[in-house]
Figure (cartoon, rainbow, N blue to C red):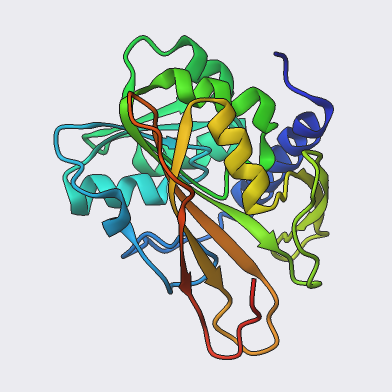
Length: 252
């Protein structure tokens, strides 16, 4: 399945985003934890479990700072796949010589479909929302070992308090650009039930969904963190939902 029109819009937007920051020589600090939402709250790298000796993939890795953190602090060996040429350039400028990190410039779904060796762990921080799930999820399932683990965070409610869509369609969202005009992207902002149905259709079983709400009163942004695995022989039940509320956070 070829890249869809909304994905082409996103590719152009992220290329502009990376070029903007290359031109500005934007300084980005190293991370000291994995943050699945947009804030340093909620669960971190511990959800991934032990990573030493495993094949790990960071899908839509952007600048590569989370993959680099796992390599440095969690003894991981990580392949980081990024489709945007300018974001990949930012990552290679920063981490090309970091042992244990392999930076790959490729379309995520195409790369996974062609991967020779399957992965033990695939994770993505906000990347799934920019790729058509009908194209992405079969590729993810094909690249995971049986019982291999999948972790990804996606937008659930935006700053305007608009919740998830009830159909598998992309919708316009705003990508902020520091000192520049915001970029419009097309995102799949789906209900947790829709995500689970899509995952199950591709042999991926949801183990748990974490609700990550913005920590500030009046901020409507909310994210969902999915923890799943590739089905082997056991059929899973419906996922446990674990809330990570913030003061004044809206209910799901």
